[in-house]
Image (cartoon, rainbow, N blue to C red; front, side, top):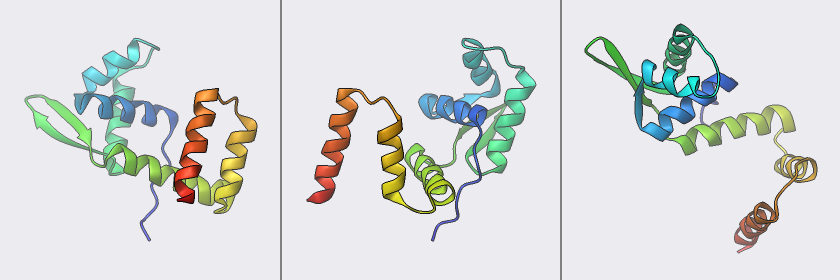
Length: 125
């Protein structure tokens, strides 16, 4: 069994998404992108990126005076690990309870509903 991922906070997830989208990024680049939606200190972004590196989710290399970060694990692997954590901790391992909670308590668009139905149809095959 794979070791579960350490919990990832909202700001950490935001930074991971930026790095996944860019492929790699410096602290300054991530900070600049976050500033387009909200205020955050440069040192806060730097600290979070260091924590993500400590958790094994980002790697970095030194380029001049800057550190360039990239994903240590593929996006799909991280998402699957986080989902597995939630499944275990919140839903006590019950896949059906997790899916029912999502479907019953969220406003799904018709397109999202169709995508879910298609995924279930594929499972049945």
